[in-house]
Each structure stands twice: as C-alpha cells, then as structure tokens.
Amino acid sequence: MNIHHDTEQGCLTLHLGERFDFSIHRTFHDACLGDVAAVRSYVLDLEDVTAMDSSALGMLMLLREHAGGDRADIRLVNANPQLRNTLRIAGFDKLFTVH
Image 1 (spheres, rainbow, N blue to C red):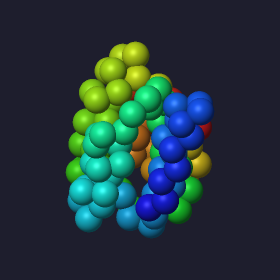
Image 2 (cartoon, one colour; image 1 turned 30 degrees about the vertical axis):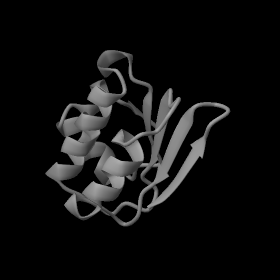
Image 3 (tube, rainbow, N blue to C red; image 1 turned 90 degrees about the vertical axis):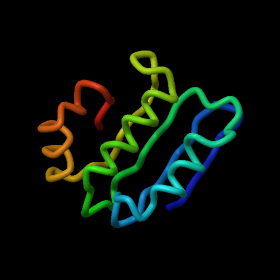
C-alpha cells in the first residue's frame, strides 16, 4: 500500500495493493484512523486490487465513521467490474462515491 497525504488539500490517498483484506488491517488503520491531522477527504485507489473480503468492507465502514458518517468525503476509484459488483451488492455504492 502506498500512502500520500496532500496536506495542502487535506486529502489522503491510498493506493491499495493486490489484496484488500485483513492482512493490511494494521497499515490501513494507522494510515486512515491514526493521528492524521487535517484530512478532509480520502481517495482509495483500487486499481491493483484483485481480491477483497468482508474485513475490507468493515475497514471501509470504520473509515466512513471516522471521517464523519454521512458527511464523509471518501472516493473509491479505479475499481474493476468485479469489485464494483461486490460494492453494489453490499450497498456500498450508496455509502461511498465509486468511480
């Protein structure tokens, strides 16, 4: 996972690797929910993700809660059709902006 924090724009971008699952829980938690000052928006780049499990969905929900719930600005970008379908079936397309 590559992490970029644009402090000027207040945007935290995560380029996730091949697997978005429990194996990255600690890194994801520290990057998104740790002591990250002045983050107003989040971009999760799913371009390289080929597998996502239920713990990934849980991490997304924790991030949404941390970022302000309904007021959260979280964009999921570059998801392949299979991931888009998983997100749609789980109803996450209604909770997150999916590009």
